[in-house]
Image (tube, rainbow, N blue to C red; front, side, top):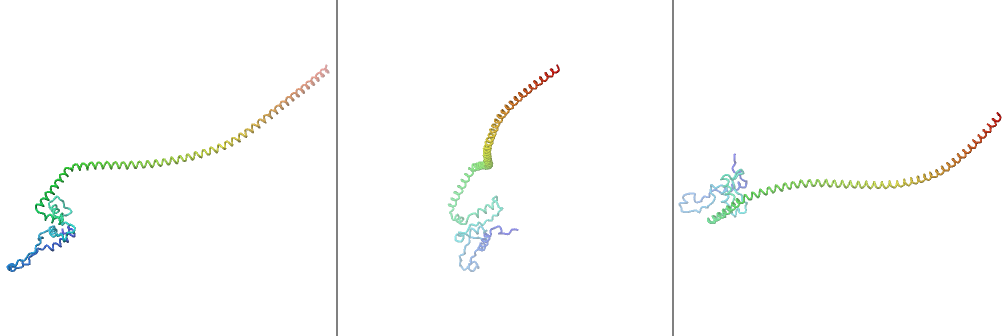
Length: 274
């Protein structure tokens, strides 16, 4: 079911209803009877440009005056629907008839035939010339567009590659910074360990010197004691040797006396026996 007027904007329906009220044909007051016409009085009938068969677009343009609607917005009374296309004659005609503002329609209507023809020829010639130039340059424009699209794709790929390389560079830079900090921390740690080792070595060296000094003192004292003991041993050895020699001499003397005594005793016994 289709309701007439629902496919038009509300303000257009309102204007259409207002204009339809004033579309009634104006009749002469003297046309009521034949007596008035026969009496010879001819009334001046009022003239209206709007006819009883005019459609909304005709009313929109015919009812225009600069004093009444000169500052109003141009609201074309199109009968076009959103599904219409320019593949058919009716939508194209409707669009061409209603796309021009009423003021421009009146201006063109006020032209002379020669002026209108002159404007048509100039406009058509310029339009054809522009169309010719557009067609002439179209392939160049398309090729330039294609080249630009290819260039744009290359730039986008380069930007993408740059972003990837930048991300990789940032990662490597962050890794390098981390490695550098680790190396710095490692060097600081090694330096600290080296300083600690040097301090420990110096301390141990001092202690070793002290130990060596004590050992040297002890060795010197032991050597001195050894020399003293060796001297005492030599003295004691000499004394022992002297004592042994004296003891040997005493033993030999005693042995000689014993032999002598035994010899005498033997001789005495022999003499007694003899």
